[in-house]
Image 1 (cartoon, rainbow, N blue to C red):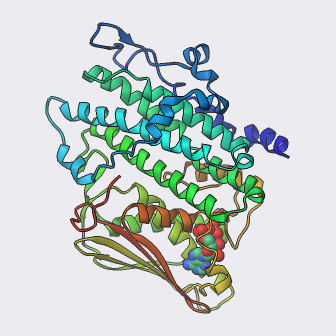
Image 2 (image 1 turned 120 degrees about the vertical axis):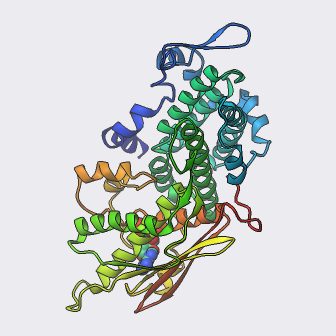
Image 3 (image 1 turned 135 degrees about the vertical axis):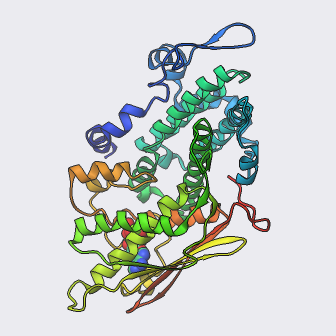
Length: 429
Ligand SMILES: Nc1ncnc2c1ncn2[C@@H]1O[C@H](COP(=O)(O)OP(=O)(O)O)[C@@H](O)[C@H]1O
Ligand SMILES: [Mg+2]
């Protein structure tokens, strides 16, 4: 049974999984300007390449060797240091590049702790679930990432920081298919799982931790660039209206490709507001919620002569939180569906496993782009991750996601996230 799935994987996920499995694959021996990083004792740090990793011990690290890895156990007992974005903003930029050093030192210490927690979570899964080939692959990859980051020498100079940043970029690249692997892994092992809450809490933690790691790494990488209006990944004048406008444009295209029609989006409320924010999580949540509203609208009114009612988005900003209310007239949900929509993998539009393996949308939707060229159907829904993942992200950002529905009429989705500048509800990454 597993055999078929494993054989299928390289065919379908091939370009995504296999190319990026090794985080050191793209690391060059030299930094971009041809220099290797030099350490205080005069030695040079040569970032690992695929070959050196294969040759040395990292390639041999398997899940089964976990028990001899005390470094992971020790770090899994420490809590990560969750910075407030406000602190990250105040660190800001210094002329001498000291801010880069401080940021790299923080990540060098903190990321191994975060990965150790993820590895610990894999270890605590029931044996039969942890043995799923896709979950095993992810587990082993996390162990490799952990060792690569944890064995990086202390960062004392900007040259070393530069090499470390390349390593971070590779970590990010090789994590890009985490979501489909997690989702498919749990889907395959679902029938072995007795406790539904186990999957939910594992996925909540895995996905939010991945979101935080992505934001922290992106922030560090962006700190090196001179982007007007940004400090690292923090946009200093984020406009919620602009986010809705661009998300609606994207979702309209997907909807039109699938159904041939799409409703309009009307935006009201605090449309002129702008404030500092990191958009990464909202770039996932808002398109997912709009897709659900669009799909419900089109499916409910497909045969009506009156045209499609628009989807309304109301923006509210107060000193503590940013709220979006996404209102559709798509017929709402009966109780039987409402009770399940926060479950991972629940969808009223179940796709075949072959389609879904390639089709999970993610922050930057590159998997969606792949599907566009491969298969032109079923992209609006079907993976059952939009609502539960969005709720986990909102809660991680000190907010919430709630739904009010009137079966027969439509639904209101409330997306709430804490503001970075809030003193009462401090957001920590
Ligand atoms: N605005 C909405 N109107 C009606 N049903 C909805 C709405 N939002 C979510 N749902 C229901 O919740 C289910 C789960 O949504 P989601 O987690 O986004 O997964 P998917 O969209 O892949 O099905 C949907 O399949 C749908 O039945
Ligand atoms: Mg959805």
